[in-house]
Image (cartoon, rainbow, N blue to C red; front, side):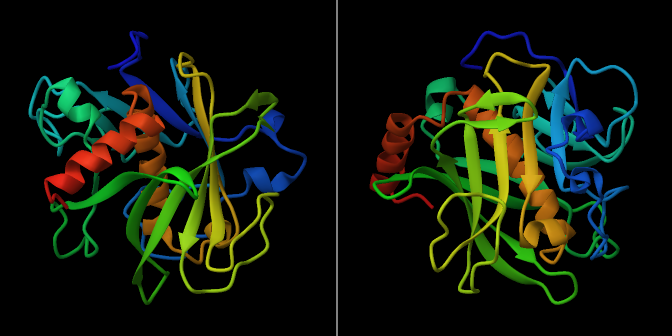
Amino acid sequence: MAHRTRWPCFFCLRKRRLSESSGSDQSTIDLPATAAFSGYRPFPPVMNLYGNFSGDDFLYLVELHFGYTTRGPLHFGQGFYLRNGKTKKDPILAAVGDEYPIPYLIKLFDPKTSIKLPPLDTEKNPRDTVTEILRASSGKEHGVTFRFAIEVGAKKRQREEFEWRKTKGSKNVGGHETQNRYTLYRLASSPPVASSSSAPVPDDTQIVAELAFRNVMNVNHVFTLELLGAGRTGELGDRWSLMVVMTSLALNWVRQNGKTHRATVGVAQMIHSKQGMD
């Protein structure tokens, strides 16, 4: 990794504690199970990623895969595994990272991060995985962005695009000031809905999540993820919620590898554009 911080092998995804509440008991209410979910429990609207955590008061275990063995969908690639439970013996629900080992300088200028999700039909193809891509790009209007597409909806699913954009300015999150924040926009033609965010909402987008990172050297409390608007009500479906959790882990992964800087993303975008890569 770019930073020499000694990272723990296991992290835990945990619901926000009462002491971290922003003043509303909504922070501790689980999302309704609006669709068939392959995870053992639904995701709540506010989640925290912790390392070096003791006890069993958490939702999911996140394992750092070093790529020393072919175990799991990343094989010899590096990244994170989201376990479908609280122990390393639980099956892998989803993964994010590199699909194969590549030199650091090549990886640094690759704008794509792979995300492995369960199949749409878990009963018909329970062991298959679907590869989704989180793609970084750089532009004048929104700076560095990370875009992905995923199926949304509880019953009738349709594929839509979403985009993580870096948020300017600091904000108090869980009693700590942070400037390392991202806002997730729904890039759809549906009209925007009310949001708890104070950021202006363009006519063709709506805010559905916010992600706040602690200091890059902090491995005890890595980030806080909050679902908003249509993401909070559950109308986008549980597959969308899983994808948002995995892209949050992906942003943490590329952040630790120095791949969120505008200059780095710009060079990667230029290289892949010249080579005609997807």
